Structure formats: C-alpha cells, structure tokens
Amino acid sequence: MKKLIVRTMRMMILFIIISCSQISPYHHTEDFDQPLIQQNNDMNSSGNFEALVKLNGEYFKKAGKIGYEEGKGLCLLNIANVNSTEGDYERAHILLDKAGESLKHSKNNFHRAKFYDSYAHYYSHLKQYDKAIIYSDSAMHALKKAPDSELKKKLLPRIYTNRGAYFAWKGQLGNSLKNFHKGNALEKSAYSTCMIAQYHLYTERLDSAGIYALRAEEMMNHQKTPDVEKLWIYYTVGYYNNEIDHYDEAEKMLKNALQMSIKTRLTYSFHIKDIYKALADLYKKKKDKEKSFYYLSKYLEEDNRLNESRFAAINKTADTFISEAKKEVDQRENDLWIMGILSFVILSVSGLYTRKKIHLLRLKKKSMKTETDTLKNRVYEKKLQEVTELAKKNDSSFLMKFKELNPEFIRRLLTINPDLENSELAFCGLLKLHFTSREIADYTFVQHKSIQQKKYRIRKKLNIEGDQDIYEFFDHIEKISHEEFQKKPYI
Image (cartoon, rainbow, N blue to C red):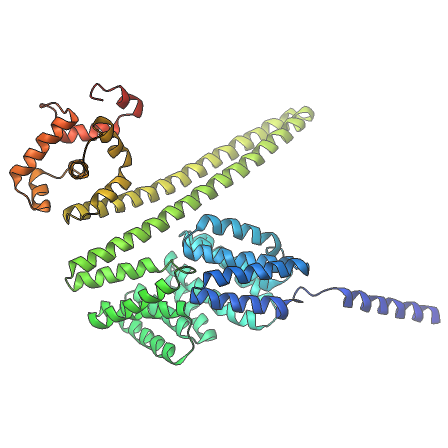
C-alpha cells in the first residue's frame, strides 16, 4: 500500500513538472503581441508607413531571437494588410501565405482569428465576397475560443463590422445590419456608428443614415479617433449631405475626407476613389463641370489602378491553383499507372476520374479567364471614356492619354511617317475615335473648312489614296498583324 502511495505521489509530481515546463500558446501575448499590434495599428491609422515597416522589422528580428515563429507571422500579417488596403494585392497574397505558415495552425486562437480576418479583408478587396465571408466565419469561430484579453476585446467588434460590409456587398442585408449592430454594441465608437450610417446610405434610408452619420460626427469630436476612421466619418457625413442637397456642408466634409485620405494614403489608399467619385457627383449637382470632370478623372484613374491590380492578383491566383492542381493530377496519374499493374479495372475507373478532374480544372480556368477579361474590358472602356472626354474638352493631355490607350496605333503612324508632329498625331487620334469633321471643328474651335484641309494634309503625309475612307484606313492599320503591316507597300 505504501509503495502504491509513493508511486502515485511520484507520478503526480512528474505530471506537475511536465505541465509547468510546457509553454502556453499565449505566453507572449503581453510582452510581444499586444505592444506590436497596438503600435502597428496606430501607425497604420496615421499613415506612417515607414515607421510601420521599421516597427515590424524590429519585432520580426526580436521574434527570431526568442524563437517565436507566431511573432514572425504577425509581423508578416501586418505588412500584408497594408498591401491589401494600398491595392498591391499580389504582394499581399504572398505575405498572407507566408504568415499562414506559422499562424494558420497555431494553438493560439487569437493568432488564427487574426490570420483568417486578414484573408477575409483581402478577398473583400478582390470583390470575392463568398470567400471573404467564409474566412470571416473561421476568424469568428477561432476568436470565440480564445481567452479574454484586450486584443480579443478590440478584434471581435471589428470582425462583426467587417462581416456587416461583406454581407451588404453580397446582398444579404438582414445579416449585414445584424452584424453592424453587434459590432457597434461591443465597440460604441464613432467608427462603428458611422458604419451603420453607411449601411443606411447603401440601402437608401436617408432618415436613418442622417441620425447615425451625425451621431458619429459628434462622437468623433468628443473621442480620440484615428485619422483613418475620421476619413470614413467625414466621407459618410459628406455623402449624406450631398444626398439631401446640402452642398456646402457636403463639400466641406468631403474635402476633409480627401485631406485625411491623402495623409494616410501610404497605408490606406483604397477609399480615396470613393471620395473622388462623391466630389465629382457633388460638383455635377453644383453645375461646376470643370471640377466635376477633374474629380471624375481622378476617380477613373484610381479605379483603373485597383482594377488592374485586382485582376492581376486573380490571374496569379488562378494560375497558381491550376499549376498545383495539375501537379496533383499528374501525381494521381503516376499512382494510377502503378496500381494499374495490379488491377486493370482500378486503372480504368480512376482514369475516368482523372479526366473528369482535368475537365473541371479547364472549366475553372475558363471561368477565371472570363472574369479577368471582363475586368480588362471594364478598365479599357473607362480609359476610352476618359480619353473621349479629354478630346471633347480639347484638353492638352489628350494625346498623352491616347498614346497610353493605343500605343501600337501611334507607333504604326510614326513607322509610315516619322516626321508627324504631335498636333498631327492628336488629329489622327480624333479620327481614330471616329469624330466627324463637324465635331472636331466644334471641339477644337476652328472652322469646318480647316478640318477638311487637315484631313487632306494627313492623307498626303500617310499616302492614303483618294478613294479610301480615312476612318477605315485608321481602323485597318490597327487591326492587321504586325507582320502584315511590315509588308504593306506604303511603308
């Protein structure tokens, strides 16, 4: 009996020693995670990009010295989030994947929640809202299992608020409003109140939008509010005032939003295009065509930048997926060949499965290609619209923008006649856009007769035969292949 008691006591002591020797997955919450995330958020909110990168670099080294792999992952995650909001989606995806190597399977549930929330944020920028919601679900599930902490207290309401936006864009308005209210109930901040106002503006409920927008503005004036959040509040209040035709107040607030957006642009540039669009709409209502066109141009420029970055990221994601899936299929084909030595039946059945898998992959690639082509066409149409508007305004930047849109067209004109002047290239650009002589005369403030003379001189310089339609000529040199073009007798 005594031996049994002694053996039991030894086992208990050993168990206590082993338990004490195990490091908790939350061991570095206070000395690493909390100060890193707090300082990173402050720098991100103020637009201090250089300090943010330096901070995460220092903490990355610190994590390496103490053997804290999850700490490295948090640093990578912070930089990935900046790249998402700045519009560099390819770099963001690379950094997220790298961060995931240490965070995705972490036993620290806050780390996993932070990782999944960042991926949800990333996919929302790509407008892939189904994926954003799936990752947000994972973030919520992980965070609820994490022990209470200051970090959890701050992250939970933001996940709810982000989910509100994802569900709104997805069209699930009931779920959207429910999540916005949950986030606001937990945070009670100017920002979370502002997001409810955004929801009501989105659903065109101006009375409710006004209540929450003005409440958010009042809270902002009495609370310590980061610059990025001030940006949202100024924008929301300005947008609301524009909707109810209070133009002076709308202009004041939207200009404040623009100022904040420029200040924080190095870490948060995604929202500036919406401010440009709101200002363009405001000045259109005020019948200030010059300012309206200026801000519309800025909006299109920023929107094009984000669209190009977006479909580049989608292309890369699709190519990576197909490449990895093909390796998987190739591996399966090798395995099936070995198995086929043992059983012809298994080979036949599995061969059908493999062909079906390849077929599905091809369909997936085709779908991705269609999506990227749609985005490319959208970008081109917006650029074409911008160039056309510049032509109508006789803007001096027309030729530069036209060259960006049709570089091959300009190169081929100069191949025919390298001595063409910029004014002649611009005139050819107007004809390429199929403006009539009367329209060109009106836009350039010259007589119709002068346009006819310009056409004659262009025909002579480009060796265009008298019976050939000049518009067809320009369409023709744009469409033929480069090899065919080099063989043309007029070169």
